[in-house]
Image (cartoon, rainbow, N blue to C red; front, side, top):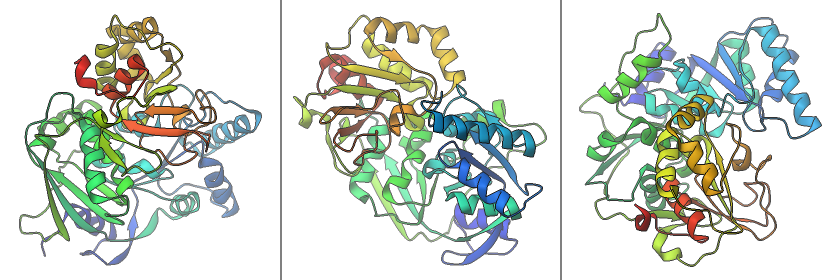
Length: 417
């Protein structure tokens, strides 16, 4: 039977051949929680009387790092205490965002089945893993048993072709695709990305696209494990684990095949308050902003900081604009410091904060005031996403965010490139 990548991975973890629509109990390779979800995980594990975790587990303090309140500090202490007791791996404050530090660690490889108590766990599909977000109680059950059940998703093949235009980045491509598919157009589907544009993207761009498949309802997404991906993995993979690419069978049947030629694509912006509400940046010219945010698990990687710094060099953030930059990990922050990128940000008037999520989820370090307009490189612009339901959030590439910070209004970045 010809199989998609999702069918192959789930079949291997269930110990039997599966096809789309089947239900199966599968062994889970790796699990994690963050400080917004781990407290419930810990409570449920204790309630079940689990003495030994049955699958690999790590926790990341990233959503509120460092702690902005007494209550959050209690959660962080609970995580630290549980990690010491259970020998789970802990990434403490300053390490960075879970969806960056975990791939950096080399713990996730092609063919793995990953459960994360965070909706953007789908990011790891850039490495060929079937990675999906689950609730805290489901995660706790997995820790207690080493297994959990899944329905095998149907798979949509998305072919992206053409030549990437100047000023267009991975974020623009995925925003455009989400606009076409709609926010619920791929509900509980697996997405296999392919085509010359995908092959041309670096790993940072591939992580960006997989990160956002959940914004069209998808269960998971996959990128090719070509030489570019394998070289990235070889530098980071933990010892004693072999890297084995996983590919779909040639004659496999997809539930749908979509094809996009992005040769004429322009920089894109998602308007409030849904991710699929997307238009070219040039159509929003004149939209004043109060805050710009560069970072998150979507666009806080080195190449994202680098393109923003290239735009900002020898320029100043517009008067009255708060420009906040959060590198996705400590390693990225160090690389940006060594390359001079952090100098550029600070001299331009931006504020560089500790690696983590912070403003993206509205826990601290940049909550907008009532009526304020924010342009962000994050993945969501729902009402209240950044901590204030009376604010307005626009989503864009790092280049568009940086250009808009200089102009004081939403701006097509091509004028600065």
